[in-house]
Image 1: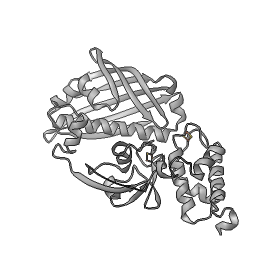
Image 2: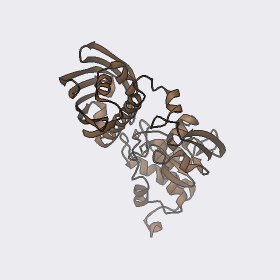
Image 3: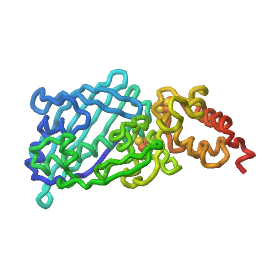
Image 4: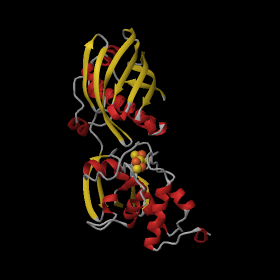
Length: 331
Ligand code: FES
Ligand code: FES
């Protein structure tokens, strides 16, 4: 996996260089970083908790700097071991230059994963890695815009917007699983964040956050949507059903029963999204057959079960619910 990018950082080059060499600043900007300590000049030990698709692990490793050119750039090498999850390696080249009173940072990075992580699929892993890079630079830019003197803890993030001023807030009113809810949140809050963080409905999963895996699928006004692609404010006024609200309290929906009976899950990470997407098909009035199931689930990835049992489960649920099945029904 290779990444390249450019950031225009609202700070002088000396301040950016200083932050790029400051373990406390780096720890603050790396999401999930529990420890980032200097072992010597340009040598650090880091502990980062990261979730990549169905794999969540604590990675412990080292980071070292090479080819250091003060104020101009360096080459960074890092490696981390995540136990049973596998390992990750990173090489990055960072270059700095002045640009209209700001600092332009250009980077190229190569990442490599092994073990269980390598089985997840490169698209998913690279989507998560790109998101981590984006989150790092968002926090880094905010830190530098604030003069590098404030910590970007949750309270500060709540109070500040992306440009360092007042955050734009939005009042979100939704019916979620049949109940009215109302919250004031940052306007940029994604629907999936709203469901998980504001309402505690963690049955909706986040696998990629980049519209690729479908783990975040929910029903919005009768249609399955990837809730990482919709702002909570955009959905305001609508009705959302999540996996928690699919079946009556204490029971299982026929899709849930069929997934269980047909062995259509292993780790279960993709399952809420699969079921919500399949539910959309069963509700659509379309006939349920191999072709329509494949079409309905084409945006949902499963990395451990394979799709044969999942398709069997959707067909079984359709039969239970009396939805037409078979090729003849598709015409
Ligand atoms: S989290 Fe993967 S599509 Fe939304
Ligand atoms: S990703 Fe594990 S069951 Fe689908």
